[in-house]
Image 1 (cartoon, rainbow, N blue to C red):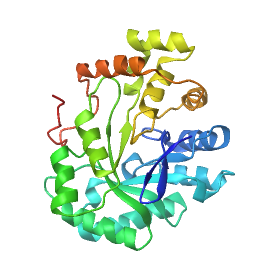
Image 2 (image 1 turned 30 degrees about the vertical axis):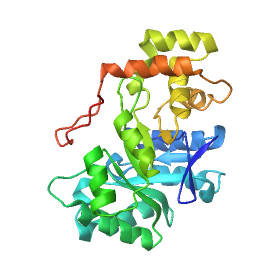
Image 3 (image 1 turned 30 degrees about the horizontal axis):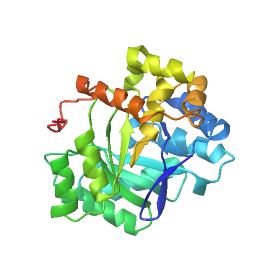
Length: 277
């Protein structure tokens, strides 16, 4: 599997998301992915309530910790400067590791200055608690503030991205800065399975619409995808996308679906999203 690289740190282009995976099911899915597929990238968060299960799976796995790219995210209740590092230490204890490969600020917060949270996150990086730092659900203006005005070397912006949501503005910005753009909800929480365009392309390759979608994401420069699944069969299928390639024409047909502007994750505290021209 290919990786995107930031500051000499390799981030596999396809990983396993764990949002909504709970208790033993979470541990089972993470362990299965590590033991039975080429998955070496696991994404979790403080807010998911499953860091302990992710940690248990990694500990039980035969895959060495250093061969796994592990991401977690600091939740909003821990954004104040004095809370960031203690919360990360708790996360590391649950994850049964001394470090994460990437730690993200989960959402922008209009009430707490970016500098306060990211300054503490930068200290955590300097202490060796994470190899890279990043942000999630940030707009282009917010990314520019963080990187330009404040000067933080954020490696990643993680946002919702799938065929029905055009994120070209954010992705172009990430590429301009050499950043990585991570796509969560990459299969639109299953909605790709019923799309006629994706079904037709899938038939041409003897694949599923989900596999076509993940291949579409995989072929995009500086884009990483973290599909979540509670099915071992689906996890196997998600990592079975390396034996075919989409043509530019097929890629463009899928890009055209983004005109639907279908945003699935949009909580009350979300920022004012970028809209593609």
